[in-house]
Length: 87
Image 1 (cartoon, helix red, strand yellow):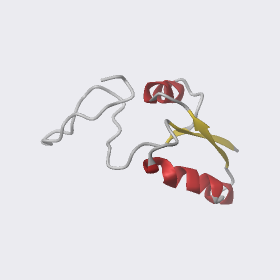
Image 2: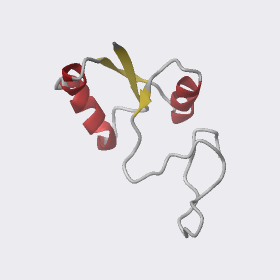
Image 3: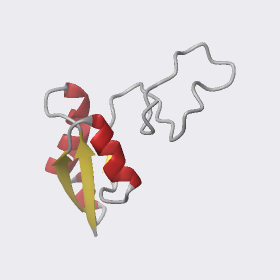
């Protein structure tokens, strides 16, 4: 089964785990034919995911993905993270 894994840049070491997983065959061992797609900028990467043109987006570690503009979790003092909705 094909799986398109998107990353927004090849500069940040944050995306290394996704690249390594594809290159070392971890997805293949699970029956997935994964490929890395470089999609820049991040907003384009998120747009492709929303539209179903890619299957997985590698994001920076320690960043919470929120698919809406709801902001931080209730009771959290953390600043609102960037989201794929442009907030």
